[in-house]
Amino acid sequence: MARLEQVHPVLASRDVEASIAFYARMGFAATFRDNPVNPRYAGIRRDAVELHLQWHDAAEWDSGGDRPTYRFVVQDVDGLFAEFRAGGALSPGSAVRDTPWGTREFHVHDPDRNGLQFYRDL
Image (tube, rainbow, N blue to C red; front, top):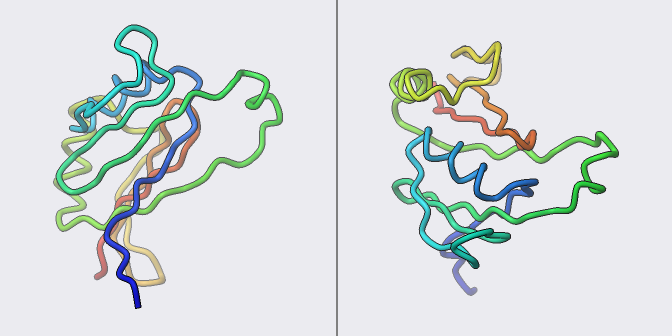
């Protein structure tokens, strides 16, 4: 059977450059932009995680629909939470907690309401 190597989720963005700046506060660095002045598609990376950001028209945001959520496995949930707090990247109400399903985690929303959950198994 063919082996899957990686996944690079594509997150919708109203302003790709603003999204790059937000993710930089979480330690992600831009790896490429389709346009250096006004990008509509870009890649960002931190450690072994690569995300892609893609511009979407404002009309697509009017529905108020639910946005996707992405889960990231991390070793030090509390340390990452402290790092994100220092970088100003946490959402209001973000807190580290132990869940009934056996994880320690916290959640963040980016400026475009994409959900980001950082967790480890207990």
